[in-house]
Amino acid sequence: MERAVEPAAGRSEGSSELPASRAMSPKERRAAIALEVQQRGHATVAELGRRFALSEVTIRHDLDCLARAGLVRRSRGGAEAVSRARQVASFDMRQLQNLEEKRAIAKAAVELINSGDIIFLDAGTTVLEVARALPPKLLDGGLTVVTRSAVIAYELRRWPRTRLVVLGGVYVHDFDDFVGEQVEMALRGMRVNTLFIGTDGLSLERGVTTDNVLESSLYRLMARCADQVVVVSDSSKIGRDQFQSILALDEIQALITDDNAPQEFIEALRARGLRVVVVPVRAQGGPVVPIPANAAE
Image (cartoon, rainbow, N blue to C red):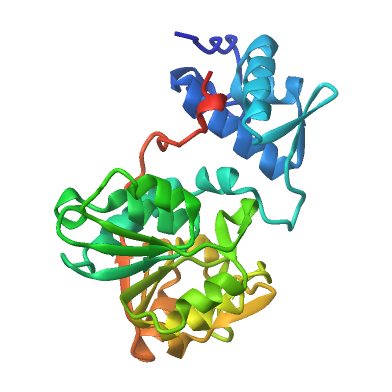
């Protein structure tokens, strides 16, 4: 098994290097490197070597693996982010962000689902974790799942007792969703018990917001199909106000988020009659992160 290089002796405690990287698996280490490049926009091999206390040979190998997976773009002497500042990161990159929070939120979300329910799992990395958290007793219990996410459909393909309805249309790779007139036509006349959606932003003034203008008109159609709308979102989205408003707060019934959410925001939602579920996120040494197979070589 590949091992990271031990940090040199004599480093100061205030160093930005991460000696703990030597305890990470290659998959976990590459996830951390990918996020570092995404946050910086660009990083050299030397900078990443100092940051993670790794040899330049190891860094170059990791960057090559990440580039093959489409998570970074190799440049002279280093790598650059695949999306620029203020642009939406790729779907694979977003899967790496706040994963512990997303998994805790997902576990709470499945508690709202009963055997035999008809649920709509919209696209997005948090909703993907909801799909992954569905227990066998639900998947074997006559559940119907509607989705416009290719990744969620792929996750649920192995459960023949779950009726899977995939809404097709024009596929948008960066968001892993289908959009367009075909989706809108399929939504007309449909009825589900619960719609689970993620969000790019959530504010008291404008409700649920997104930067994805291609799909913004779909959300009110989806909401009209549902007995209840549940927003699943980690606390980093709270207070963000993105380009397009997709649902007002009075169009959703519940929010599931983590315990880093501002208390005043939670209280304001509850005062408006929304159900708010706050899940604790236990601090750990580092999350287990999913990396595409071709980045784990």
